[in-house]
Image 1 (cartoon, rainbow, N blue to C red):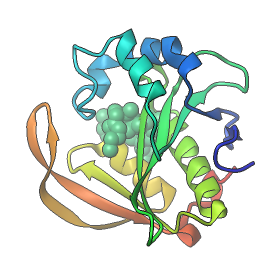
Image 2: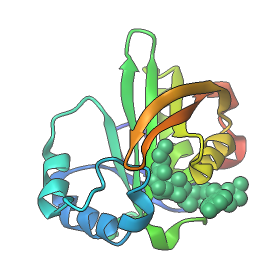
Image 3: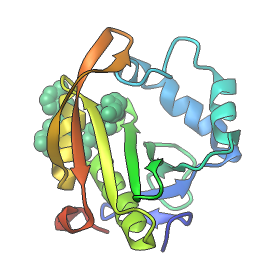
Image 4: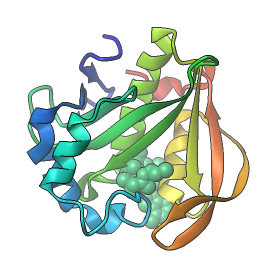
Length: 184
Ligand SMILES: CC(C)(COP(=O)(O)OP(=O)(O)OC[C@H]1O[C@@H](n2cnc3c(N)ncnc32)[C@H](O)[C@@H]1OP(=O)(O)O)[C@@H](O)C(=O)NCCC(=O)NCCS
């Protein structure tokens, strides 16, 4: 299984490449999670509508965008994990993730992120993954640390969130550090 194909996590969830047909399920997951996503994800505003989900899924992009599902054929979306190119010459990509409110704290984010990162490293195009997290975002920092990423510093006033500007912890993940116990 490689990047661009469905990927199974160690916990049995599936990552499927984001596509237009998933718009209603994506909207449902975001709508059910607004309160917990909005403080950290600038796109999750009161103006996020079913059309926003459709627009997102129909955008042409270089990102590896995947949605997380509880099983291979399930329709309901558990969350999303994506890799965005930062510097393609050097093979540096940025990881992003969110998980719907009612399934948080059961390891979904770390398993999904580890699965995508492993496929990305195996593809040969990604040599280093960066994770940028507001210093106050403890759940996201715990995910980064569980993946095996190393905190490399704090960038002052790096992120603009609904509550204002925040310092961000920058984490780096290299292939050999990816947590063995999360690999699919
Ligand atoms: C960050 C997020 C994706 C984590 O998803 P998840 O599936 O719950 O993650 P996991 O279960 O793999 O791990 C969550 C970790 O956060 C910890 N955690 C969760 N809520 C917490 C809280 N309120 N205070 C402290 N720790 C908390 C859990 O204990 C766990 O860490 P541990 O295993 O060391 O105990 C989810 O919280 C989310 O969607 N947040 C909003 C969007 C977001 O912040 N995205 C990342 C932007 S950088």
